[in-house]
Amino acid sequence: MALAPDISSSTDPVAVEEQGAPIDAPGLNYFVFGLFFIFGGITSLNDVIIPKLKELFTLSFFEASLVQFCFFIAYAVVGIPGARLVKKIGYMRGAAAGLLTMMVGCLLFIPASQSAVFGLFLFAYFILATGVVLVQIVANPLISLLGPAKTSHSRLTFAQAFNSLGTTSFPYFGSILILGGLATVSAADLSGPELDAYRTAESQAIVHGYLGLAAALAVVAGVVWLFRNRLKGEKHEATSFVDGLLLLKRPRFGYGAACIFLYVGAEVAIGSFIVTYLMQADVLNIPEQQAGKLISLYWGGALVGRFIGSWLLRVVSPGLLLATVATGAIALIAISTNSTGELAGYSLLAVGLMNSIMFPTIFSLACEKLGPRAADGSGIINVAIAGGAIIPTLYGALADATSLATALTLPALCYAIIAGFGIFARRPA
Image (cartoon, rainbow, N blue to C red; front, top):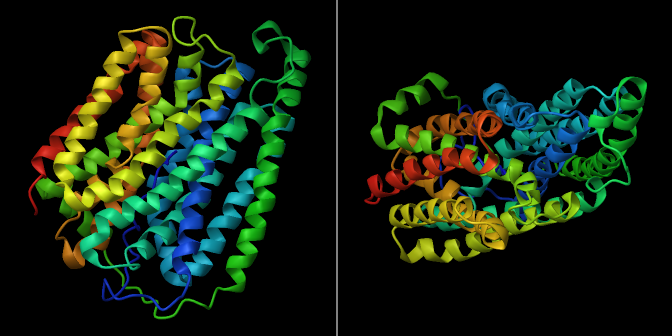
């Protein structure tokens, strides 16, 4: 969200010369893991905010999905220019710029709340996501330099576990702070000045949460800036994004890039509306805040799965393991949509466990044996994360036309295509 929204690769113009040569910076791995934790947690907060904004502004599912659209479209809009910026100013300065941009995005929730205009909330999310993209551009290429190439599958999955630690913890505490307000009325019952006043008052919980994040981001950005010259041996070379587009002609890479688009979209779509899904009378029939806390189980499954997957990927074919977990996700969705009560609710939450190793495995399989063109390929992968903007909006539109359960057919289809890629790429390139 999310991500997390998970992690992405470096964007196209940023590449480290002599790939595989370690960078001389003791303790760098802890810094990178911390960045994964931060942007993972902030991305997953969207899942908590969406039901809140949906109620405040009486939105349809499609309109509520615009939160994810404005967040994840930043990968397509900002990714390439952001990578060029990092290439120009370096990794540590780039990380500081990203953290400060995230801080600005958090502060923009103040005028958004005071004006009670949904469009300003969307703008704040875009700016916040711009900072997240910049931080990811820095974090991901550094991971590739922290160990030998032969363990890249395992190492990338292990790094994602820290991303998942953020996506697991942030929604739980965010639900306590933001969901389940004290209001005894609904926005649907108000109009005019009373409605504006209600929206301003109820959105203060959102503002307070992001103000706390802004303060924390300012501190982290300051620390990063103090160590801006610590990175030794950092070099970059320019590559062409057009070259990356030409890589799409390669079946293995083109299929893999499409699967990144579909995976991020499916994961974000489920996470975006899982609170509302769990609240339904025929599922768990629980209050909004309680349902929000359960998001941590969805992302927590990914956290546990990534630690397990980090080991499994050393002994099991990555392609076959990818096909297995994608099939498992389809089975869990089918169970959820064809049952009621706790079985329906917890089977959908368990999809998070199946998501665990998908992104790093798809990424590694798609970019296998690209050699000096790996940076070009990673730029395309980064743009493909914009699936988190497109698939959730389609899911929202489908849910408006049918139901949340029926709309789960869309992410199930995404997982089916991903399973096919696992079988297709089961042998080394």
